[in-house]
Image: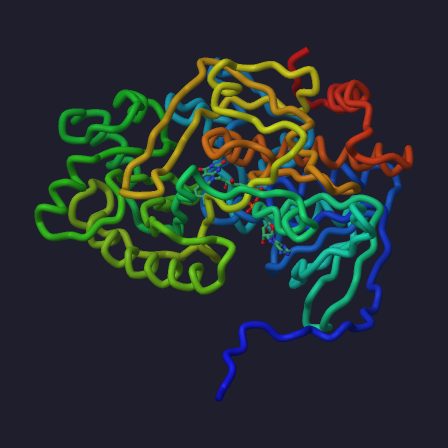
Length: 459
Ligand SMILES: Cc1cc2nc3c(=O)[nH]c(=O)nc-3n(C[C@H](O)[C@H](O)[C@H](O)COP(=O)(O)OP(=O)(O)OC[C@H]3O[C@@H](n4cnc5c(N)ncnc54)[C@H](O)[C@@H]3O)c2cc1C
């Protein structure tokens, strides 16, 4: 009789130590880049591992950075995130923070420049970079994280670190270390992923003037039509009647809304319209299927844009994003779990380490629509939400901090993730220098340092 084999034993191995550092950042997206900059400020040894060939994470897939301005149009993210934008702007690779009635603000960035500037800035700070390197496992002593196992073309190696910051977006390190994690809403449903793509030869002037001048035909969600008459850089969200008409004409479209984002290059527009429900961003088979389905959807969406949306008549596919954009996977359970009520009541926390204002923005796990809810002003992100339960020497920054499914839909945009990165990097530095756990960091001192170094906090 043949026995079914579900598991094999991995034999214990001696693993060479590649590096010993003070602070290790895992993941080089918006949170990780800024965390590494903050951690490397005064001579500590800092390393960052990133499994792709470039830095930037979702900053490289054609998305505008949302969240630098609050609902009252005041700038609420400053400090190192702003310094990163300034460096991009020096090479005409970032726009101003342009107010937007729906998104609070949009800051357009050029993906290729993001990769280059992030590389430059981290090398200037002396951060040891390991691209093409995946986090594979944790090295634990009881509940203390002592480092990680990495996997690369060189095989399995170890990096030992006094403090680790998990900026993977998926809480990969925290999950492996035994931190309790949650995923999705009460039914486990997560916001669907999107494969972004850009089109060239788009007449963006025609698009915006059509929307401004023919509001009955080109109805947008929440953004008044005259906004488009006044702004050359914009995001269109809506044109639902065009989608409806196209569907009646036999087009298969995965979303109820047309979402077009102008690029920084002449004639370029990024399209945020693929959507593959049910993808689990922590499962490679599910991700592969999602990638396949999204690529099929792109063919249908391009036909729709060419046929129905003004300005796209002669446009063509320029590039697809380097990976499927994942909106939601694991969230850690930390010392505090941020909720929808915290956001809608504009809650202030004594241990607030970043200020955000982006609304609750849930792309429905099922169907093709989205729900938005605004608070009217700003809310704080507490330090405790970066502190995982049960494991020491670990901080989490970025979209997988400790929140509910609803609260995560608001704090996930990139400017707050960058601000969390700065706070986590500075906290890790304080912990290493004072030989204490991140959970023992004096938050008043952390807030003071953030303010002194130019971050924005409510006092
Ligand atoms: C389709 C889509 C549209 C969005 N629209 C916007 C928008 O318009 N504006 C906005 O501001 N935000 C938007 N968001 C949200 C935002 O992009 C993310 O929530 C944000 O980028 C999260 O930042 P992060 O640093 O936590 O994670 P990420 O940007 O995901 O970065 C994580 C990094 O860690 C690396 N990594 C992951 N796992 C490992 C591992 N095991 N080993 C080594 N490296 C690893 C990844 O390669 C990546 O570089 C959107 C998200 C999606 C998916």
